[in-house]
Image (cartoon, rainbow, N blue to C red; front, side, top):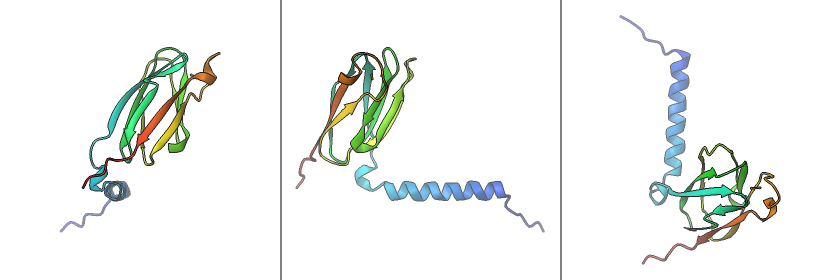
Amino acid sequence: MTKRRFSSAEAVAGMALLLATTVTSARQDPATATAPRVIEVVAKKFAFEPARLEVVDGERIRLQVTSADGVHGLQIKKFGVNKVIPRDGTPVTIDFVASRPGTYEILCSEECGEGHESMTGSLVVVAKPKTK
Ligand code: CUA
């Protein structure tokens, strides 16, 4: 007769799994259970390419951002986005939900040279088409 006792590591792993499952299921209502829309963005002196991103209200967005030259940043204040884009071209993944229609400024948040202040783009979140 063996009484198996869970080690504390197993207990922690179990809890983490449970927690992760709970969080995931809470977030994944059918409307958002689809894969995110992936948009590749290049940051360079002194622009974002494309400069204008258009998405639909409620969409999960995944930006894959690379720098073509030096260090830049990509900030969208409305959605709490602010990431440094390194100079080595490593893609930076930025996930957020475009949870409100409107036009929002995309800013470079790292001092990158003379054109830094003018390095902007826009995120346009259009209202969901009505389905009836
Ligand atoms: Cu790019 Cu500041």
